[in-house]
Length: 320
Image (cartoon, rainbow, N blue to C red; front, side, top):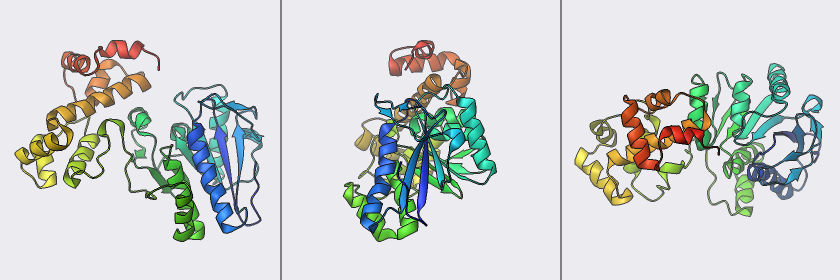
């Protein structure tokens, strides 16, 4: 626990077993470095768990906890951090505390999959948010009315969410920039060899999209459009029109940069989304097929087996 100087900011981190240590460390070390650069402890932080007991991170390291969720002192933002599992002992207490915090007008945030818990508590209704790309498919199915953008971070009034990992740095740097200006924020980024401070408009680099940095801007635009239309696939003509190209030019673009046709790449994106839904949700396999643009169960199963070497039913039986 670190207390800020009078007039500073205090952050609380509600940690659930198997939370991401990297996401937490990235957030805390960013403001720690800001304190060093401004010459005093403007930022403070405290750790919280459901019952005040120590919590185990996903890497197996135990973390000492300062407060139980029912005893949180005055803080400026309460961030939630959890791992892949959205069910855990004491969840009802955590949800109740988040609802109470929200009703009192408190600011809430989430690192990585923490947005799921905020959504379950009803604290993201009417707000923009984001979540790690690996959790986004299940999130969108579970909370279809919440605007989950898929960007690296989102700040919407009193809601601060990020995709975890290095995006925790970007979110906290935006807070530092608002408090001390761009010069201090850039200096903190330099301390971490953080090459570029990403903005809330930057999209996450999702798994199947790979790294398109340095490649055609039109290719990137088409790939993003594909990722946004997995449930109702668009046609080759529509993609070409969106980029101001001919269908043949789009085909050459994909072959040159990604070594596959646009249709094959689009199919892979849809099947990657299907795998996420099978792993993250209890949706019936037919519903997963429909949610990823397949109108035939048999065609979906055949395509899935060709891509991953196993049928969808076997994926569902596998524990990750």
